[in-house]
Image 1 (tube, rainbow, N blue to C red):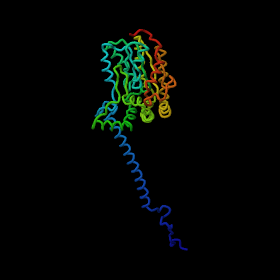
Image 2: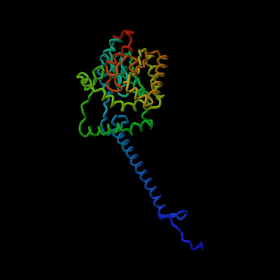
Image 3: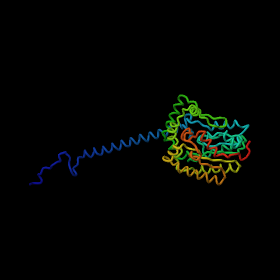
Length: 354
C-alpha cells in the first residue's frame, strides 16, 4: 500500500491530535482565562474602593472626635469640658479626693467615698481616659483651685495604656470599621436634621446619671440582654486589639504614681469589672488575656515599689458582684460599684480630711 496516498483520519469530534491543535480553541482558552482574571481584578478593585470609601468617611466625619478632622459635631459626648466647668464651680470649696478614670469609673459615688475618707469628693473621670490624662487633671485641680488633694482613686484597664492613635495599624483598624461607618452616617443625619437630647448628665460632684437607662431601671423595663448584645460587638475590638501595652503610656503612669506618692497622697488603683459575657468574648476573640496579665503584673510591681493599694476587679468574682448589675458589657451599675468601694476603701479615714 502506498503510504503517501493514505487518507488522514480525523477524530469524530472534529479536533486534531498532536501539534496540529485548533488555534481558535487556544485563543478561546486564553480569552476565557483573561476574562476570569479581569473579573477578579474588578471584584478586588470594588472591594478596595469600598474599604477606602469607608475609611475616608470615618476619617472626615470622625464621629468619636478622635482625630480632630470631623466636618460635623462628634456623635459621642465629651465629659472633659463639663467636668472642667464643674470643677471650676468648686473653687470656693475645692475637692480633697478625686476619682480618675474613664466612663467605666463615672458611676463611683462620691457620697460613698466621702463616708470612708472624709473631705470633699469629685468624680473627675472622663471618657476614654489615658495614662497621660491623670497628672494634668491633678495639676489643674491643685493650681487652678488651690486644692489639697489627700486621696486619689484611679480606675485603669488595657485601653488606658493602648498604643497611640498615630500608630498606622491602629488608625486603619479604627477607620476601616463598619461600626464607625454607621456612627458617621448617623452623625451626618443628625447634622442635617437635629441632634437628640443627651441621654446622660452629671451631678455637681461629677457623678454620672444615665437619664434613660436609670429611668428604665426604676420602671423595670431596662433590657440588659439587648445592651449586652450590642455592646459586646462594639467593645471587644476596642479592649483587645492591641498586641501589647504602650511602654510610653506605662512610663507616663509610673511618673504619675511616683509624683502622687511623693506628695503624700493616698492612692488606690483598681481594674474595673467586665460583664462575664464580655470576659468570655475577650478571651476568645482578642488579645485581652495577654494585655490583662501584663497590666496586672505592672500594677503589682508599681504597688510594691510605691506602696499604694491595688485591686484587680476585672471579674465580678473578685468582689462578689452580680452579672445583672451592669448597664452593658463594660459599665457596672452602682450596686457592683458599692461592693468594689467596700473592698477598695479603708474601714476608717487614715487621716482627717475635713
